[in-house]
Length: 220
Ligand SMILES: O=C(O)c1ccccc1N[C@@H]1O[C@H](COP(=O)(O)O)[C@@H](O)[C@H]1O
Image (spheres, rainbow, N blue to C red):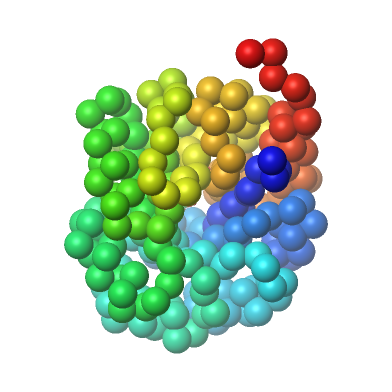
């Protein structure tokens, strides 16, 4: 079995890129959503993206972005995957895959059993699913450092690869992997000292904790 695949999201400083690479990120995410403290100007994202080594997937996180906004992002920044973190419909997901010819990962917010059918629905049109905590009313659509009840998805599988997100950090990632079976993990707040301020040691600790879980034989 290959090790866990990690996505470090919301990099804002050029120094975050080598830190994420050293920690072994498989995906690096840039946030293009103005209300977020992790939102980066296109020119900054372009510079950071240019320093990401080949083989690491550069992800553009957007929230209900228009075609014009997406055109502008993709014209300026060499992006490998779109992460749709808003209320994009399944039709919109399918249309954007076709329009840009890029893989699309659709975030689905989970708070209770009633949210689970959405995963099956988006699993029919997206290339990947991002299983995140449903944000509380009035909060940002993601990046809130909040987890959901991981038991809700224990043992569930979808027809496409998926990633677990929401409130992950070095102290809970092993438990999250054990309960959900997640092999891909997305983290933003859990590797920050303040909103939008990533920390190299926290990235390393997160990666070490995820890999250490893999190294421990299961007692089941
Ligand atoms: O990070 C943000 O600011 C953000 C803004 C809008 C939508 C999503 C956002 N982040 C994503 O949310 C999840 C969970 O983040 P956290 O680890 O709980 O902070 C993750 O996919 C981020 O990429």
